[in-house]
Length: 516
Ligand code: XMP
Image 1 (cartoon, rainbow, N blue to C red):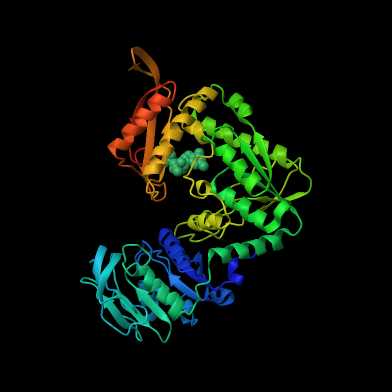
Image 2: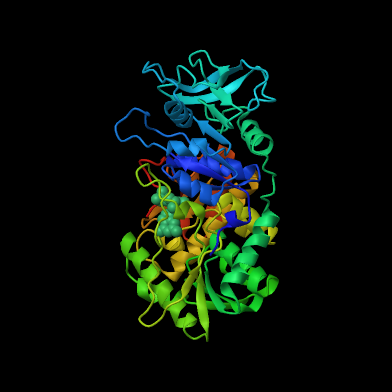
């Protein structure tokens, strides 16, 4: 698949530290300019060949003097392409162009007041004389390289920004890409739109049109198959492919029976009734329940469900004639390997597909240049409902990892009913979608209670609700007591077999978000 940069003005983000580079790439795209993360040591020849419209040097955790610190090809700085460096990037620039970076051991971390000292700065145009910025560095540039003027400072960092407009080189010691830098996005946009002269043309409509064109070119008149799970990524792939190739697309929805209330119906409604996609809905609940009967080990459950998915999927796929392609919802962060040594290397088929003997489809990955928020925007633009586009992360094995112990139809129904109440109540309260994930868990224990005049011996439901940015760490959500009380009442009154409700107040780490 040819990539966007052949048609789009592209900004290269040199990756000196993965999380910084990804954030910068996203900020550039928010400024409606297409960006790609490239290895920090990309050669000047390759840069010349691929002709980015501008380059940004990311921050990174290393010190430029550290042994094995990542270094760029200095010749990239001489290509005449506008370059902006952040944090580690300003130091790289200074190092290669004859500036000085004294080892002072006086770092600056967190909020700092930025003072613009040169009112004619091109990069800081429109930034007030004082504003807030975010710093995170130990060393800093002591003397700017010849040709550069210093344009801003903070109390502890004399060179907080410098520029040499004649050579098109700009740099900041602070991090414009983080939200804590008040005028960060403004600075990035000034660089992209005014200094590098890149028009803001990377829009959702544009992304869709280009992807559609690329898919058509790649697929021609071949048939494509796509596994649909109801999740955001596979749903957007399906909608996008349908836009591109219409009835050359067949989707297979393997319904394992472990989805939440009404979810399976919604997948069918959306794709078959609304989009008129050729959808094969395989109701495999009985098959799964049989395989899972008596299985209590979480990893075993996951394994069975994963294996069976491909089994069912290929049973259906091989019934179809002339399928050449298998569509996958791989996203940009999935294709970028993190870390400094192997920065921005493309991962090889991170999701290995277990093709049965004698079966092979080529992969088509139409979302592989997009970040998750872009995928959601594309989904909305294509007319997917909010419940799908803003769906919370939901484990592939579904409710199976939220039922502790063995899985039965009855337990699934119980958890589905309680979970629906939790989703309804927190959803109505959390209109801003500030809670990352919320759901119910059905543990394998029973406790004594009393309802009316009768003693009960029922299961509890555990409510889990967390705030998080990326699911790597999470904090339990501080839900209002009234909301917790309402959910507790409703669950006990409306869901048979539940006589107690608990709220999980464990953060991650040490807990995980899911219970299994
Ligand atoms: P944990 O429980 O490890 O979860 O804190 C982190 C995030 O990953 C989701 N999750 C899964 N997603 N298959 C998936 O597709 C799984 O087996 C699985 N287990 C956990 C979880 O919901 C959370 O968002």
